[in-house]
Image 1: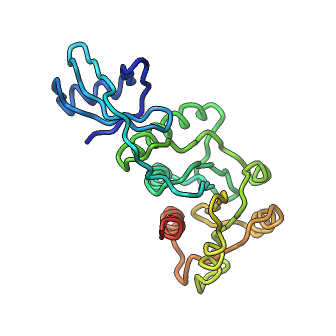
Image 2: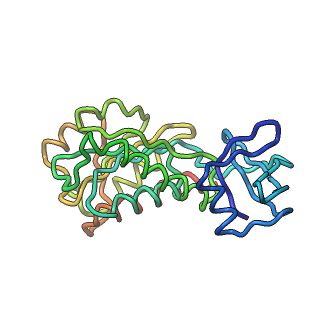
Length: 239
């Protein structure tokens, strides 16, 4: 069943123009069809009562929780091309609570202040579509583009940094993951295509980040994000 994020006022569903177009023109919705709508973290079963004009009514609340037990923050360095789009999409599917974008020393991609709002708006469209597809009830936050000296602004109980300088056994990563307790907020820091500089590694460690290895092979930046988040999600959802 198709899922959307919207508002519900007096049992009447309010969707944005893009979602309305998708329902009517793409999904070819008909009177009596049902959709799922998430409003303020709550999931509702809704029924289309009219197509022209489009009217949808909330008929019942559904008890569902597909979210991770811990809040996970992905701090992802800016990547070139559409690689960052893919990281944002998959991170949303894997259950992160927030995505923070990092302008690191070796980031090839740059986001100028002039483009910032436009880029963030597009990234959040990717987040919304991925959250709907993966049946989430929360939209991950994505509003910050920071530099390394702003890293202390990211609050977390467990702080991990994937670092190719620790290439080898994954015991450091797995050991750190196993220490995560219920309710703790976890941050995972992933570098750009060229990796982190020595100064950046030292700076992150000063801020409390523990360097961990993701294995014996050097992973692409986007693959490192998928791998790290998959391992975290598998651990947090093991029960």
